Image (cartoon, rainbow, N blue to C red; front, side, top):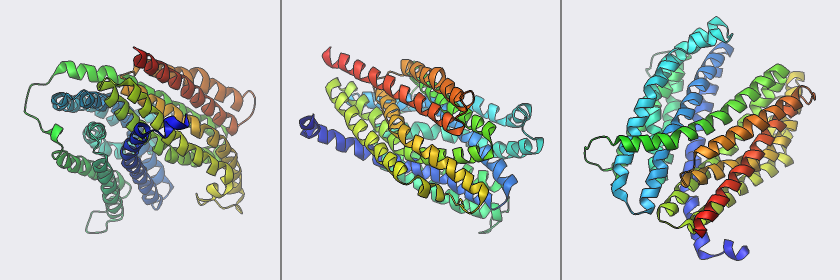
Length: 452
């Protein structure tokens, strides 16, 4: 095994995966930074503004993130085309991705326009629902740009232009920060818009990011294209690949949303501790998520080239990088959970904060356990997408999270009275099962392809 890991071909693959994953991870962290900036800026306006803006932004970006899964097939097919040295197929793929993104954006905007009545129906206070509705009514005009941006990023990752993705994300973070401050408080000659200034800043930053990325893409050879009719067969293929990816993302996101709701039932301290811990877990997850995107590209490239042995090497390299990082983060969580909790401005001398800190410490110990499995499952999913395998993984993910993870979380939290730790053990079990079944499927499929 050591000889395999030290072989020149494996080291070359490890470097190629790292070059792709590094900029993608920084881009993901910059995106998280945009959300953090919004939260900090809105917090200065008080609880009501923070609640309305936080809920509005959370709804928008969560729903859009799931629907963006529809266009992730662009990167898969582009990687296969490059591996097969069929670059003439790439421009129609890119164009079809933009068509699909546009078709998905229109109904999504209609859904977002009706957020206020939906919130009222599910029992949110009318005043909060109204404020969230106003926030989303501005932000929803970023929907087309967000969908097109997903196509751009998927394409750029597949052609190895991840530095452009990173650069645009960092620039958007800076623009969003400046505009947030200016539009919320009326500085720099900008109008004072209060909490609506935050969503306006995000709207401008997202449209600016897609325009700048489009300009940068003109320098990539395969993006240059003639005007030809839309190939609806390609659009159909993208849908066939993309809808299971969207479902996979949706079932996982909804599981964690339900986990938050269960924490709310357990009390304010449990819910606050959950938000702190999930913030930490979401941040560390950005690294294996980027590695999974790199695995998608590298596995797809080698499968397109007809070399399943190299595809397995690419997956091994991704697994080593992603799970290695998550193992390190798990060790840090095990070694210093109390110190990590204090990073969130919680004060031990305050009785309410002390209760939250105590729960966070217990949850971080569980979080350390599922760090490795969370990394393993997302990398396996990325590798499977590189093999154009998306439907069965969606079923496996749904089974892992909802047939196992959710029942375990509920049973441990309530009938067995484990409380907040029960919820998190349930989430951990769901992720562990997903990691095992998805990895088993990838190695079995890739071995079959290698032996064919």
